[in-house]
Image (cartoon, rainbow, N blue to C red; front, top):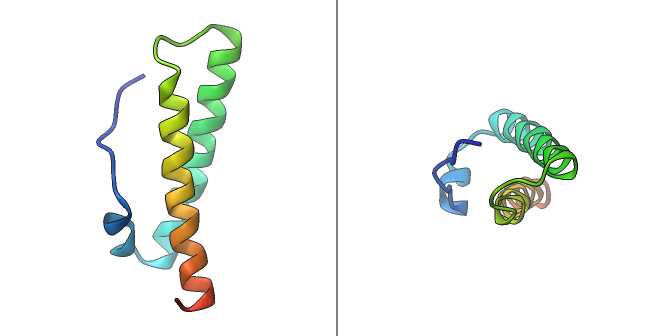
Length: 70
């Protein structure tokens, strides 16, 4: 699997809400595919799953901040 540049929370703040929701959906599908792939045939670097979970958490945190007006 091709590695992506790690994006930090500051980069998510510049996205509009629609783009943020779309990115969350994309990352969730990517994580599901990676987990399934790992279950069928172990991937070379399982720490990729951890990083994907963290990226998804950063996105969801930014979305929640916007919902509560923080």
